[in-house]
Length: 260
Image (cartoon, rainbow, N blue to C red; front, side):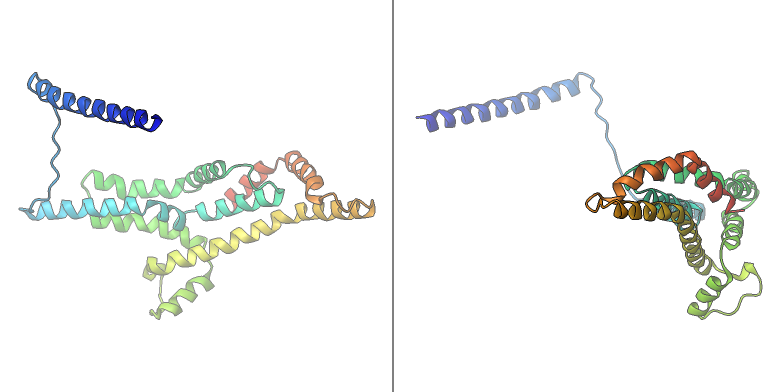
């Protein structure tokens, strides 16, 4: 009997849902006839009737491609890589892998990237974007003008041996000036140089915290407290040291000055 009652209840619920669906189906046409506007969206691809249409379509396609690659460009061609690695090293050296959280570190790295890249962005705005918006130069000339300040910034932070490495790997002719260097050589060389610089700064950051860990470990061993984790005792001292020397101020100042 309980199974029969349960089956009846399920059948009643199904009938109620069907009735509600039929009611909505009969009411919606009436509402549409009473003046309710239902939007209609058409998406299609038409044929270009003039060279200007082809040029505009290619520019829109190029802009969409750049926007989809914007995160990768932000990481590869700006100061973001060095900043986020140094901040991650700092958090690891303190011994708190979850504090500050990743969202705070990424946000701080983004704003520091905007700060350090502001002169480059200003040059791009003056030499490429503003003349293009005023129809003084073409889109191709604007792209070439915009890549100049960005390439100069990357070359200032790139080691000569890294550039020579990718020139030899690509088997391209030896460039006479920096204008002969292509982005396919400059970008990976810039990334390798940034990684080396970031790891060097991270090593310097680790040294004082490593000394604290060693002192705490030796002290606990001399006191016979073998079962007490040294990390638990050393973390408050490392946080105290970092706060007393105003660590975040020093880290941000060192990162900003490393790009000049």
